[in-house]
Amino acid sequence: MQNLIIIVSIFLLNATTSLYAETIINICDRGIIGDEIAIAAGAIGCEEVSVQSMADIQQLFLSDKGIQSINKNSFQGLWSLQDLDLSFNQITTIPSHAFQNLNALVTLNLAVNKIDNILDDAFFYLPSLQWLGLSHNQISIISRETFHWLSSVEILDISRNQIETIPANAFEHLKSLEKLDLTLNQVENISEHAFAGLDLLKDLNLSNNKLSTISPITFEHLTTLKQLFLFRNRISKIPENTFQNLKSLTQIHLAYNLISTLPENTFHGLTSLEDLLLHGNQITDIPENLFQGLPSIKSLHLYFNQIHTISKNVFRNLNTLEGLHLFNNQISTISSNAFQDLTALRWLYLTYNPISTISRSNLGLSPYTNILGVTVNP
Image (cartoon, rainbow, N blue to C red; front, top):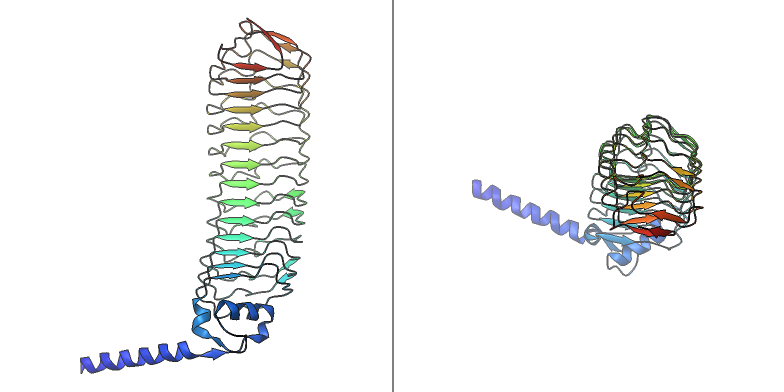
C-alpha cells in the first residue's frame, strides 16, 4: 500500500511539472516589457511564451528601451529573476506592488528615469534585494514608508534627485543597509532621527547639498559608520559633540563649506579616524585642543583656508600623522617646536603662504619629513 502511494505521488508530481512546463501564455499586454521578456524566454513573440521559460529567467536588462510605465503585472512569473535593469527609460511613477513576487531579486536599477512618485508598498516584499539604484531621477519626497519591506538592502543610491528634507525614521526599515548615497540632492533639512535604525551603516554621503546646520544628534545612531561625506554644502557651524558616537569613523569629509570656527571638542573621541578633510573653508584659527584624542589620524587637510598662525600645541600628540596639508593659507607665524610630536610625518605642504623660510630643528621637524613650498634651513 505504501509503495502504491509513492508511485501515485510521483505520477501526480510529474504530471503537474509537465503541465506547468507546457503552459503557454500571452504577455503582449505588458507592452515593451512583454516583448523583452519573450526574447529572454526564447519565444518567437509575446503571443506564446512558456511559463517555465519565464520562471527560469535570472537576468533582465531593459535599459534604454523607451519604457514609460510599469505596473504590478509587468514582471509576473519571473520567479527566478535576480537582476533587473530599468535604467535610462522614461518611468515617472513606481506603483504599489510593482515588483511583487520577485522573491529572488538581488539588484534593481531604476537610475536615469523621470521618477517623481514612489507609492507606498512600491517595493513590497523583496526579501533578497541587496542593491537599489534610484539615482538621476526627480524624487523630491521620501517617507518612512518609501523603503518599507527592504530589510535586506545593503546599498541604496538615491543621489542626483530633488530631495529637500530627510524626515525622521526615513530609513528605519533598511536594517541591513551599509551604504547610503544622497549626493547632489537639494537637502536643506535633516530631522534629528532621520538615520535611526541604520545599525549597520558604514558609508553615508551627503555631499553637494544645501545643508547649513547639523543637529548634535543627527548622527548619534550611526555607531558603525566608517565614512562620512559632507563636502560642498553650506555648513557654517558644527555643534559640540556632533560626532562623539562615531567610534568607527575612519574618514570625515567637511571640505568646501563655510566653516570659520570649530569647537575644541568637535572631533574628540574619534579613535578610529584616519583622514580628516577640512580644506576649502574659512578657518582662521585652530583651537589648541581641536585635534586631541585622535590616536589613529594619518592625513589632515587644512589647505585653502585663512589660517594665520600655527601655535605650539595645535598638533601635539599626533604621532601617527603622516601627511599635513597647510598650503594656500595666510600662515606667517609658526611657533617653535610646533611639529615636535609629529614623529611619523612624511609630508608637510606649506606652499602659497606668506612664510618663506623655516628651520627644521626650530620647529621640531624630523629629518625624514619632506617639506614643500618653503626654503628649509637646518
